[in-house]
Image 1: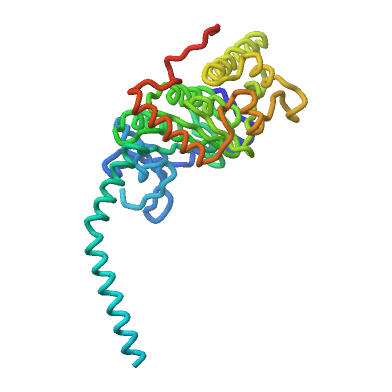
Image 2: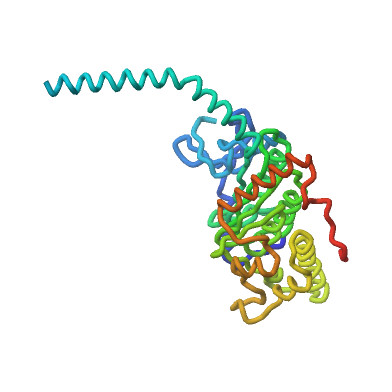
Length: 72
Length: 258
């Protein structure tokens, strides 16, 4: 990966290795498979959508960073 | 007496309102119906795609970065291209750059779309944000926005300097070729801006302000949201009149492509 950015790499990659502590889980939400990051109190943050339907990516409910609630 | 008056006045006004409402109802519906049809034919539905922070490619960046995810944007672009309800795409850019491959991939996707596309650079469209800004059929930049053009850098220890230099030069060439293909700037001018000294403290390169970016031919026009939307609706209108041919698109190739 070649970074082409005005932000220095040490700033971009600072705190690297954070992902080791994160436990992402894959769940079904609104009929689509999404990878979420558990927060607390049944709250999850959407990290990415796994779908072959392009329409799923236009669904505002499934945007990365969205916080969803529910039990999975 | 006063109270009675009030009541009568009140009642009268209510009755009047009810009357006018019932009288106007069919007319309202007509306006609504007509308005609805005229809006969807004359102006069209647009989709707004905002690109902020870092363009994230093969690596998930640490959480202090705001990122635009490649694997999310690409299917979105496919959906926009395929959707019958969406007539045009407005690309809002405020990005500090990011992954070269991911940025170029998104830019190529946008450049090869058949639907009208307009970009608006607000705040900044730096590094890999430059090819993304020029990828649309028409581009705008806010007068206060800036674009940083600089070479692709490498940090850390380098083994095999000549080869690495050659490799980075070729990587950079991809950016130069894309930008010159999709905007009015010449290859020489763009390279000159990229390698200019004395403007950036710890790097070579140039910071272009809104107006300067237009003068160099990198961006088509300075403007804001209103101008961008107006142009997009114009392009939609033009496309509807001419069928599927729009002036600038993937089919266009530069004469001097090396």
